[in-house]
Amino acid sequence: MAEPLVVLIAARDEEARIGQTVEALRAAFPEAEIVVADDGSRDSTAAAARRAGAQVVRLPRLGKGQALTLAEREAPPGALLLCDADLEGDLAPLLDGVDLSIATFAERQGGGFGIAKRAARALVRKLSGFEAREPLSGQRALSPAAREACFPLAPGFGCEVRMTIDAVRAGLNVQERELPLRHRATGRDAGGFAHRGRQLLDAVLACGPTAINHRGLRLPLVGALVALGGGKAPARVRAGVAAIALLGLADDLWSGPERGFRAHLAKGSTTGVAKAVGIPLVALATTRSLRKATLVALAANVLNQLDTRPGRALKAFLAGAALVRGPAKSYVPIAVLLAPYDLREMTMLGDAGANALGALLGFGSVGKLTARGQLFAIAALAGLTAAGEARSLGELIERTPVLSRLDRLGRP
Image 1: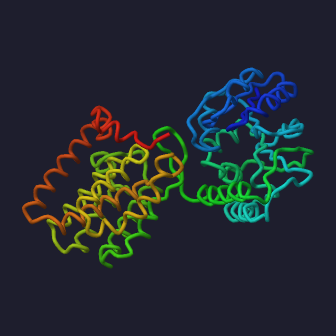
Image 2 (image 1 turned 60 degrees about the vertical axis):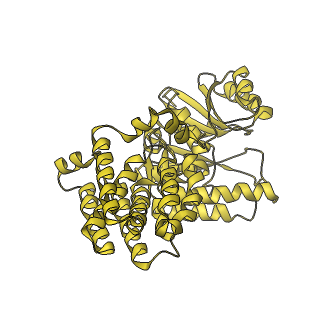
Image 3 (image 1 turned 120 degrees about the vertical axis):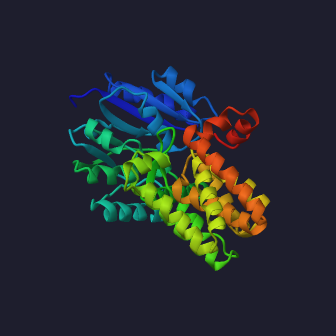
C-alpha cells in the first residue's frame, strides 16, 4: 500500500505469544509501526511486546474495541492492519488496496456450534446487505478512508461486526480474503462457550444505537432498558417512565451539539427542546398536579446533568431510591443490572436512562414528601439545575474530595 502502515494488536494476558507475533509482523512489514494495545493484562504482556520492538499503549481492562480505539489515537496516520495477539500466518495479501479487507481462515480451527457466527452474519446482512463469511474475524486491513469511517470502534467483541457495517454504509469497498492462518482456537468447553457468549452479546449491542462518551469511546445506548423495570410500580408511573425514556432516546439519537437549556432554546426546534417540553407534560399527566410535575421534571433533568461519567447517575439513583423508595424501589434491580456495564465503560445510559431514573426519584419524592417538602425539593433541584447551567455539576463533584472518591468507586 502507498500509505504508511500501522499494525495494531489488541492483547490481554498474552505474555507467552505476543513477542513471537510482534517479531513475525516486524519481519513481514519492516517499515510498519507496530502498536500493541495492552487491555489490562495481569502478566508481562507489555514488557514482552516492548522487547520484541512494539510500541505499547497500556490501558485499564476495558474490552477489545475500547482498547483498539484508544490505542489507534496514539498511532500515526495511514493505513491500518489489525490482528490478534496469537496469530500465525502471512497477512500481506490483505494489503491489496481494498478499503476494508477481511481475512477468512482457509481451515476451521476449534469453535462451538456456530451460533455466535451465524447471528453476526445475520446482523451484518440485515444492517448493511453484505454477505460476510467471517464476520468475527479480527484480521483486517483498513485504508485511511476506512479508518476514518470505522473509528471509534464499537466496544468489546462487537467491534468487528460493527466495523463491517460502518464501512459498507460509508460506501467503501469491503472484501474477504481466504488465507492460510492459524490462531489459538476456543473449544467446546466452559471457557469457549463463555467467550462465544460474550461475542454474541457484544455483537448485538454493537448493532444498536451508540454514542460517544467523555473519553471518546463509542458505546451502546442501553438506558431505554430502564422502561422494562418496575414490575411492582403503579401502571401510571410505568407508562410515564417509558414515555420519558422514549423522549430521552430521541434526544440521544438525533440531538445536535447543543448542551443545556439555553443552548437548546437558542437553537430553536431541537430534540432537547422537545424533551424539555415533553417531560413536564408527561409528569403532569402522570401526577395530575403542577407542583408534583415540576418536581418530577426537575429531578429528571438533574440526574441527567450528572450522567457525564461512568456510573455517576446510577449511583445517585440508587442512593436516592434508598431514601424515597416508592416506585423507585421497583426499578432498583434493573439499575443494579446496568451498573457494572456502565461503570466499566461497556455501555451508556444516555438521556433515555438518566432522565427516566431521575423522574423515578421525583415520583418517589412526591409520594413521600408533604406539600411544603415538595416545594423545598423543587427549590433545591432548581438551584442544582441553575448551577449545572452555569458550571458543570460534574466539576463540583470532582472538586469535593468525599464525592470524588465515591464517584470513582467501581471504575477501571
